[in-house]
Length: 498
Image (cartoon, rainbow, N blue to C red):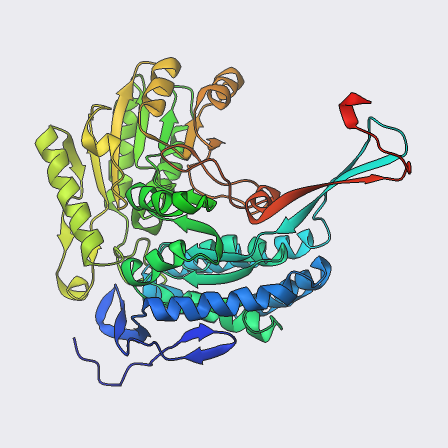
């Protein structure tokens, strides 16, 4: 997999400087649509690198926490303006390193833009409360305060959006940051840090260390000077993060897996539902925690839905995400491709009917990438593994249901609870679903993907540990409440005793 031109060599960002790793080794960042293309070489960092980054962040915190929040916000606003200007270049680089189509990477950068603008606005809205005291001549209020160094561990499927979800609220509330981007997509975080630095972020406030979860992630989450950890990834690794943080009672935010469902009722606009299932199931090649990997269809319209849906799936154009005609890109790496292929075999062995796809694509333009056909299983049992376990690839399982109550029971019958959707034109059915679907996000007549940055994002059960990203809800994780009492009575008052 040699390249004719030497790949660009990148460095860690520590205390305002681009520096070599202490380990003196590197890993390749390759294009999943064409593995002959090496995007760059990134440091395989060590615990020493992590320690240096945390120390720089801890030192910078002493002054950054004292910068007025509106002034911190002005830096974020300038960063958002730069993101807008460079959106197209950032999107193209993201497609090269992650694989999803250009329309989607533009959306990924737009999410970062939206989040940065939103959190810039929160710099003047970090509201506390004042409230009447129960005693005379006494004033009571509560305010937010920063926590310290934030350790951020981000995934590869949204290489700039999710880092922005974590970074921007951390910064605006007065924390400093050490971020470990996913090894599949470090370039997008590199760009984000360059932009924040250009916008005027002081040295040491934002630091990046690249490398594996073992050599970088583990020491970061256990470092005694790290005040909090935010992690997005698999439920299995999330449990390890929780266990690592527990001995020090270190707060951790976990955004984990999903097995999301679209419910299609007999009164649904069927063509609209099919559009939603295509986008929800195969957007980002199904590599979303919110992907619509399950569809439960009312038995009265089941046959029609299956026929139309599978026909549409078979027409999806798979290819390089930089090609404007491409509708679905590759899996991100060999391991993810193998996971998809393994679950296709599991589905077959479980007795599900393979109605579309099911194969790796290897001919011609596909030969040097991690491409897999968009795949549909039908006549599935809700208890099958392909209907219970997160695949994180272009595989959708369709199952019949008896009606609304049965559909909601199927929807809630998994260990995850991130996102769910119902297609119906019956307002009573919509409100029943809004009430009884036990997920953090519910969509009516839209697929399970498409979060907006000013609303909370997160899920129930094994999707997370109760915290939320996005919106002002994110501020609660990155700040502590401090309650303040001012007694100006000039005498001892003993609260409830007096």
